[in-house]
Amino acid sequence: MSVTAAIAARFPPTAEARFAAVELAWLEAAITVRLAAFGHGRPAELPSPPVTGDATGAYAELVVSMGLDTAERLMLALALAPHVAPAILDPFLLINEATGRRFTEFGGIAGQNHGGFLPSAETAMFLIAGDDRPLRVAVDPLFAASHPLVRRGILLLDHRHPEEPALSAALRLSASGLHLLLRGDENAPPGPDFPASII
Image 1: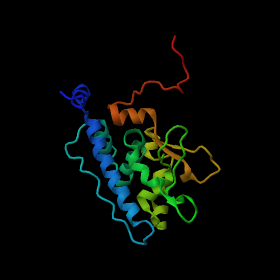
Image 2: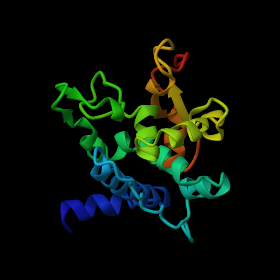
Image 3: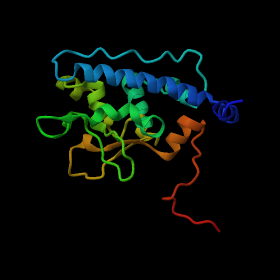
Image 4: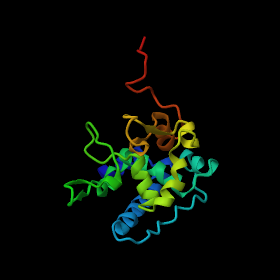
């Protein structure tokens, strides 16, 4: 048995892992389509989300039980990508030759240790609505604190600098949200920020 096969045998993919892989592949296709249309003044026809069908596991069940639409599923996959497939977001590191820095339209947050692209709410807005300003206004409720994914504590909109535009907030999964999507339950082990110590 090869080393790779031995690892796969020791850690067989869960239903959550299989569904996440499909959602991330769809996210990658959506990014490709959105960026191909960027700057050309033509609408981008985003690919349809994968059919949940008979998919099992907590991730698929969340999508079905909450009735998540295309935009909401893109937001979830976007927040998941840095944890599982960060290279999917590398196209957002593109430099605007006119300004010598990254495109404002793509949003994004600079990480402390992470070398890749960390999405912000602006990244999700660009992916969902591009530069269609009326659509951007129409889908703004997706980024409200009252949105079910935020209210349930799965998605976080981290407003590190409240004086800046609301869409500059980091878009990320909570520890319990990440645990749910990848492990199947929301009982994430305490992280380094948990205000307790071992007795």
